[in-house]
Length: 556
Image (cartoon, rainbow, N blue to C red):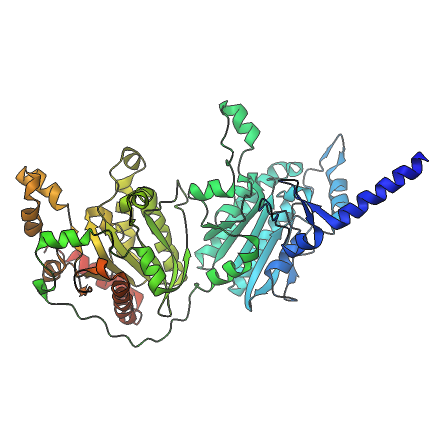
């Protein structure tokens, strides 16, 4: 009877597997119909279970639109490799038979909400999604197809790294695929990279990390060297969130973490910002307000510019933007919350919006460093400005900062270099650029995102080489002389208009923008549209020449 007991047990196990899915992360049992409907996302811990490439295609591509390319490219065995368990060729054949795949990536043409793209999906089931020469060939051909057809390329990575069975040939696929991506990007075409669990080793250190935009699914394992290797090498215990998507977002290497259900919509929306057809708006440019009649005494204006209730960039986003896709990270060190940016739609115009972010409370200000950006903030802004140039988007910059952060670590990471680099790039940026100083324009920290074709100021904003208090302490040797310093420095909008530093003044509600932030942001929106509309009609070569003439003439 033992055999019958075992058979009954096996039947029960099979039935249980058919009825229930088990989350690999938290071991929770989930009704399989719910599991499938939720795209294999655990309702308990939000872990995103790995998907096959076919499941990914169904998730991302419009129904029936996927047309596979390069299916004839299979596994290659350049070393005729074998080990104690058998030959590489035999293992590859067995894996192909088991998965129905010819390689670790499937590539093809597809449509996403009707938009044609080239899509590449890696499948971890095929030899751990490892990067072999066949994998590299398929990715290279996909990039070349995108280049030939002038289409965006989207790659979804899931890989354990290089395929050891192919030795140095596998290693060279890292360079080979990046070379193909570089050609695509050099041609100005979009490349979006989606990192899923896991993306490690040679794939993470090649095409997966060089997207125009890098996004990841929540909690994905992403890294280069293995956790145990690192711990054994440095003899330290690593943090629990080490090499997770969340860790990489914090350290500046991802634009965002996107839940699986929102992934297609996010990608489609991001692609809509590539060389958009801008609407023909009939918005009159704001006329520059006359001289000093627009504001009170300079020191009083300084106090108004610093009011905590003045509209921040996030207020402008909430009140003025039809859409905003925040993009994170400098791709070098971190993501600065005191200087934010991303794709935005304002009055129908698609732009790249960047700006300093202050808080309304002490706690909020601590979180954003009181609007004082670190080098990673300026480098993030630089990355977004360059992306705007490639994607044909005008740049809008909202300035409100006491200055660049004066800290030990900021200096060590190159605060001066970051600002200088921005100034150099902004001078020749081949896209329209509008700047509005909405509060404090503090020295180089403000100028680091403010070399625009049109520079405007809110009525009660200030813009200066140094704070009045700082100037009074240095030149008067008396901090109490700040009101006199404010007047002497000519820091108000009216004075700067006379000096030719700015091009116009945006009126504020009576008493100051802090008393009616919604009305103030409405004025900011009109000013943006009024300044941008004529700039969109000017050839970029002329625009760059005019920008050079504008800034090269200051101080003559």
